[in-house]
Structures are given as structure tokens and as C-alpha cells.
Length: 111
Image 1 (tube, rainbow, N blue to C red):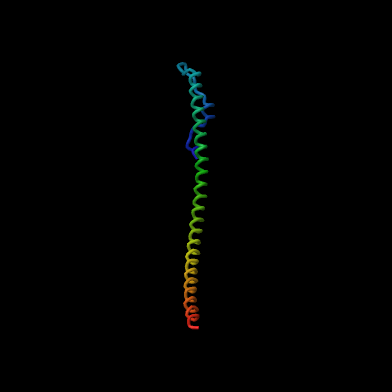
Image 2 (image 1 turned 60 degrees about the horizontal axis):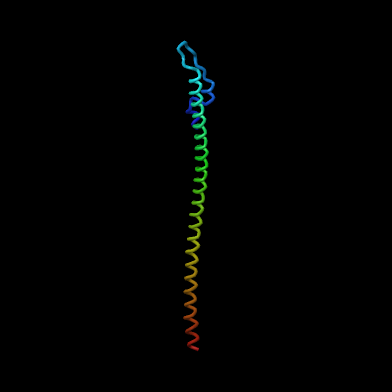
């Protein structure tokens, strides 16, 4: 992702050659400085790659968690629907039971 935005890669820096003038820089200092830059670039690229991998892992985890949340909501809706039906059925059975007691209880008292 970031590789398209970075102009220099560590190998580009390593292979860079400068023209030498009579008043040029000291080659050892330039080489040492470029070695430090190469090391930093390698570290930056490692950090970027690790962060990209971590980001991909986190995005995958988010997708999984969203799916789990959807499934949980669906299960909860189904449970609520079933639970409401069961409560209604239990209420009906209790009412019938009470009516039976009243009807049969009155018949037993009459006999």
C-alpha cells in the first residue's frame, strides 16, 4: 500500500553513486550516512508491513465479530418469539385448567 508512495527503497540507497568533484564529500562519511538511512528504511518498511498485517487481522476480526453479533441478534429474536409463544401457551393451559376445575368442581358439588 505504501510502497507506491515511497520513492527510495533500501537497495536504491545502497546502489546510489554520486559524482565526485574535486571538492566532494568524504566517501566514508557519505557511505556511513547512507548505511544509517538504509537501516532506518528497513525498519520503517518492517513497521509498515507489521502494521498492515495487524490491520488486516483486526479487520478480519471485526468482520467475524459483526457476523457473531448478527447471529446473536437473530437467535435472540427467535428466542423472544418462541418465549412469547410459550408464555402465551402456558397462560392458555393455566386458564383451561382453572376452567376445568371450576366446571368439574361444580359438577362434583352438585352430585
